[in-house]
Image 1 (cartoon, rainbow, N blue to C red):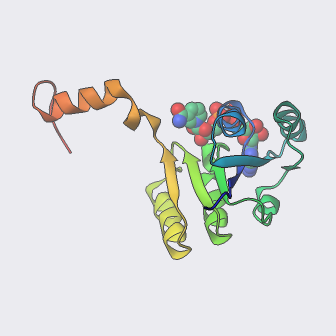
Image 2 (image 1 turned 90 degrees about the vertical axis):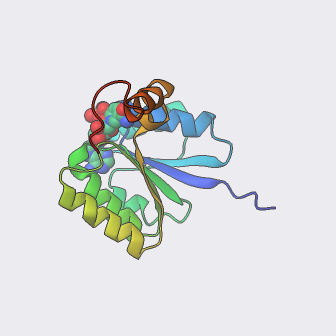
Length: 151
Ligand SMILES: NC(=O)c1ccc[n+]([C@@H]2O[C@H](COP(=O)([O-])OP(=O)(O)OC[C@H]3O[C@@H](n4cnc5c(N)ncnc54)[C@H](O)[C@@H]3O)[C@@H](O)[C@H]2O)c1
């Protein structure tokens, strides 16, 4: 049996980044949070202190060289998503990227191309797709009971 835990690095130690970091640090049995990234050293250091982590990086490109990291969670401001996701894919890391995916459709296409070329997984944090009330509403629209189905 493979006991390897997925080594996770959260890129961006802000509001949403700390939600992911706490979840990975405390509540995800098959994954282990191994590092944080934030260019604001105070944020990175405080996150590591709270989560009892030994490692932080100020530049995501350094984190991508860390062999303990199998996957990254991209929670930096949206304007940086494309560059971070493409670099992570090129480094062979799997990726969970927060929504919105990127700034333009062209950037999204570049990200998809990079993950396909490097055979890594990319998931976008559209958590509402798993929200019971949203699923129920989508079903009601699809059934023609409310609104207009337009896609
Ligand atoms: N799924 C959701 O519902 C949801 C909710 C909140 C935020 N988000 C998304 O998460 C992302 C972050 O939002 P937030 O509210 O946490 O923002 P935030 O401003 O609280 O945090 C962003 C953090 O990223 C850091 N940062 C800046 N440049 C960076 C870089 N190049 N590399 C690494 N870190 C960098 C900043 O120093 C800051 O600590 C945004 O894309 C936002 O849209 C999604």
